[in-house]
Structures are given as C-alpha cells and as structure tokens.
Image (cartoon, rainbow, N blue to C red; front, side, top):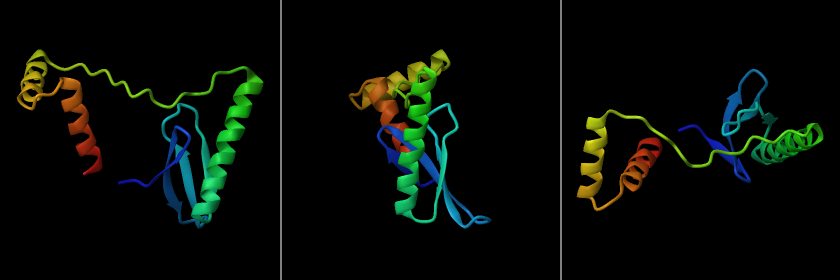
Length: 111
C-alpha cells in the first residue's frame, strides 16, 4: 500500500526520492499536478499545506475553479449478466448493490 497524506479533502501519495534524499508528495485526487517535497514528516505536512494554498491562490487570481477532490460517485458499466450476479450476491447479504460493491471495493484496496 502506498503511503498517503491528507490536507482537507485532498490526498497525496508519498514516495521517497533517493537521489535528492527527500520525501516527495503528489496530490492524487485532483487533475492538476500539485507536488511537494520534505525531509521529514513535519516538513512534508507543511509543504503540502503550502502547495495547496499556493494552488488555491493561483486559481483565485486566474478566476479558475480549483479541482475538486473526488465526489465519491463511481459509475460502472458491466455486462447484464454481471449486473444480475451482483444483485443476487448483494441480496443474499441483505444489502443494496451499492453497499455490497463499496464493501468489496474497500476490502480489495485495503487488504
């Protein structure tokens, strides 16, 4: 699992840049490229906040709407047979397809 860091509703993945001997963060839930570096966790947190503030200020100055973090909605297109099988599996557990799928997706990502 890739380490992440959160600032408000924005999430960044964290890597280690061996060449520069710094941690490198990149915001993953915005279309714009927003990155930052830090030598320690504290510096990384500070630089993340600073990068986000610079980004939001830039958007405001340019009259551009900042990228919004993901809404939590995912639309999937599946074969009718799979749709039927999902409905049956969810019903067997007394859940909606949405509840059932969210639980299984959560497990797939975090296990």
